[in-house]
Image 1 (spheres, rainbow, N blue to C red):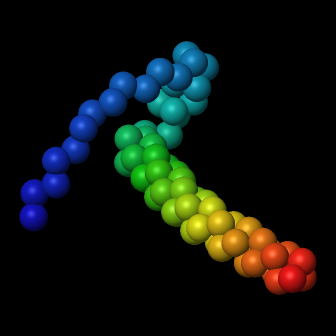
Image 2 (cartoon, helix red, strand yellow; image 1 turned 180 degrees about the horizontal axis):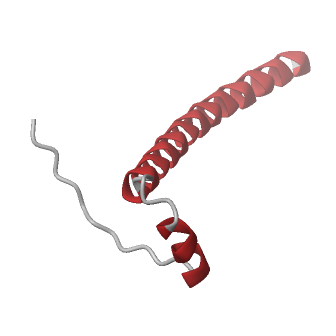
Length: 73
């Protein structure tokens, strides 16, 4: 399966770049790719949970209003 990837350019302060050069064994691109991927997945999950909570909120409001109407009668 062929996976197409998009390239991005990242700027870091010169002092960070110098530190990175001290550790050539680290695949910095792979590390950043992993961090971005994990963060994007977490944000997608959060977004889905917020949608579900909003649906539950609508249902809860409906139930509360139903109970209130029942008490009035």
